[in-house]
Image (tube, rainbow, N blue to C red):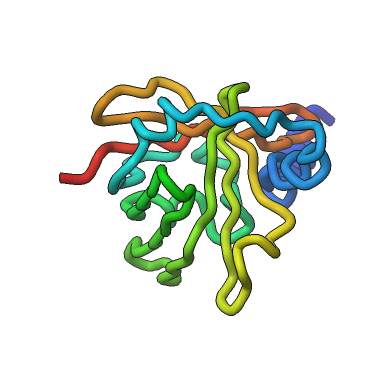
Length: 167
């Protein structure tokens, strides 16, 4: 019986692991502080490479990051953050994954939340109504993490995206 319950839990996790932050971003946007953390935004200015994605159970569970692709496809992706206008871009270019490039709109509020909006082609950034909320952690001159939350079998788990500054 335990084996059946375990298999059911793993099956549910494989099909139900999606970022919880997208609903958070759209539903709580009106409750978020509109004050920005300018010093942290300026610290992120420039080009970055996403070097690792980690989360509990990563050998067994697939995570669809930002409703775009498997989290493993984000490893090696390049990100550009422009701090004076809160725009930028992201490019996924991992082998065996579909290539993807998109403009982004981002900010960091005074609560330490990274607000990310992915802008679809032909859409003005001001018309993008949904996005993602992530926590900023471990910020140094050359690295930082963005931490997302996913729901795995009714439990919230952290997905950590590790960034290194590009040369």
